Length: 206
Image 1 (cartoon, rainbow, N blue to C red):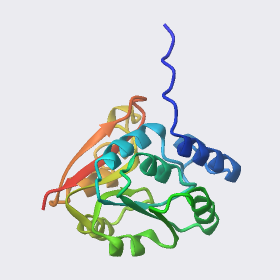
Image 2: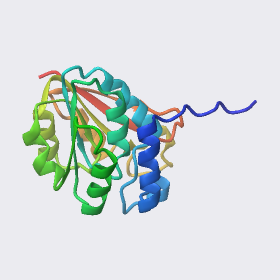
Image 3: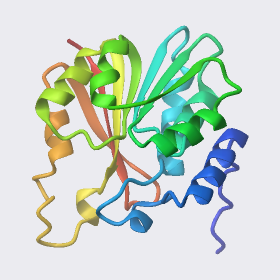
């Protein structure tokens, strides 16, 4: 039995992946290793696109633009009256992403500290927190920047069943703790089809 053909990528996403390749920006967590960021996986991107498609007249924020792959997924699906602000701390990556996305006037690419800049740009209908948010106060500020009913997504999570026995992440993952302990969120974990990666998503209810 042959594996199904992968779904075609939106043209802007394919262009962003090409930019990532030119810059040497890792496309997977395995390529990145423990010390560096990696690109938005296709499964994560498609999930983001589904959420972005519903942001009619809304505002989307991204923390950690990287080479622009996540932003490309969001921009490819969001309605014409939606806006996206994405912030990247690495100047070279921010410049490359700005050039990539320059043809879409709905998108603003900023070079700077996302945790300092994104919350003040709200309120948001959707936030993609892809910049290593780990502190409860920082996470609380992001949740506070959501509209009621707005959603926050965080990727680069490993499903517990995919963790090796004895892994310190079993029951102790800081990202899961942030979502579980935030009383303003209704949250869950979404496991990707590869069964090796998952993401966390929460909807602001309070």
